[in-house]
Amino acid sequence: MHLEKRIPSPGGLGGGSSNAAVALIGLARLWELDEGIDLHSIAAELGSDVAFFLYGGTALGTGRGEEIEPIEDRDEPCMLIVTPQISVSTRDAFGELDAPTLTNEARNHILSVCRKEAGSLDPRLSVLTNDFERTVFSAHPEIENVKNTLLELGAANAALSGSGASVFAVFEKEETRQAAIKALDLASTWRKFAVSTISRNKYREALHLR
Image (cartoon, rainbow, N blue to C red):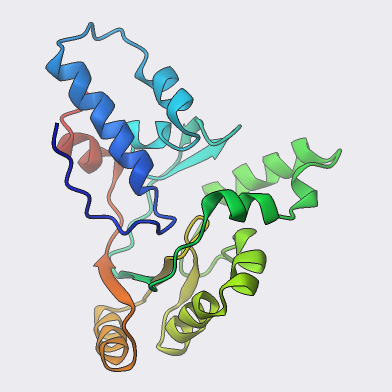
């Protein structure tokens, strides 16, 4: 098996998890396994967010991230991912994570609020919160500089992706995104990726999933 990895690593973009999920799908077809095989359970054993990539689109992940609840897709054609040349250890990021509100007695209420907010999410207007930002930015100030720079260049919103080091930004217009890319070309060596969201249907069509 040959796997060509194009997603920056490590970048907090789920690259390894998406590789694992697509490898599972490919092996199931290669070995002509029964359609009733539970790929979701296998994916959950491999990693917390591997199962998401069996579905695609916009979804809410609960539990360890392996419980997937599809929600309405968000169409965002003008996004930008910027990845500085920094390696953030996922293990260290989780080890230093301080999110006491996620483990207190009100956790069921918190989860219900998260579900409601996820259903009405507007990537351009909603407050994007990533609990990793506090510790990751403290350890790697350059990553915080990436976020601040994207906002200064006209991004409507920006946030750390996963545990980093990538930061994603949402732009209102393609012209603003292109201007930001040109400015970053002149001012930094950060890797830049112009991207857009993909609907669940298109994702599944691309992988020939039923």
